[in-house]
Image (spheres, helix red, strand yellow):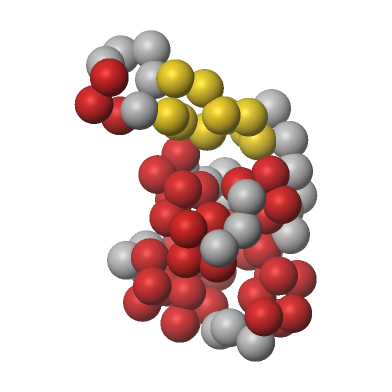
Length: 80
């Protein structure tokens, strides 16, 4: 469960506009908003930056962690 659909409505932003801001396909935004798809870590970051919200506000239960594979990725988000 996530708050993406509610936040978009509150902010007056369409899924299509969010897609343009993030570079994520509109169909993927739709599936994430409906809870049909778990977002990738990079999507969580892009969506939260585009909406100027903390990842935890949009995706409750998400926890930031350092990437265990390399420093290049920096922080990744894990939904628990």
